[in-house]
Image (tube, rainbow, N blue to C red):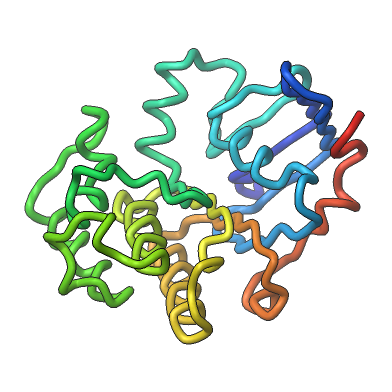
Length: 228
């Protein structure tokens, strides 16, 4: 029997209550360990898709199963616990906590929910990840003291430190120079390969696409996107 997809979407419809944006995704699946890039024009709903898959927002209609869990079948607390334990998120705006150091930001998932246990092994993993992305010498600094690219690398480490089943990355290399862009993407791909995770990445950088198993053009995938 074939393994269940890490992401399975059917007949999804979503609309923001305070705007004209509407989104429809008839069908989308991502296999275990698959590395998928999503491309498409700005405003087409790519970031919204990641938020729906993570259970940050819920669809108006349809089904989303993420790593075996039905997002519409969990309450808000259940979805939050599920995300912390099973999903690594790289937000486009980083979502770092200003008053926490680099290391504390990387370890933040272990601070916000008891479903994860912080121990010496986890700390060592966080320090090792920081070393891999080139910020090991900045672990005691605050985000405001760092460049945009360095803050982006903190966000990538935070998404990987829990060894999640699924990594959702929104423009994870968007603020990086070409050298660090390639380095961070290599680390993302290597880390999901080491843990057997799936990777769903939103990107505008077409130079990165050959590194993925599959590329989804969001404008083609969605039945309705943008203004309804």
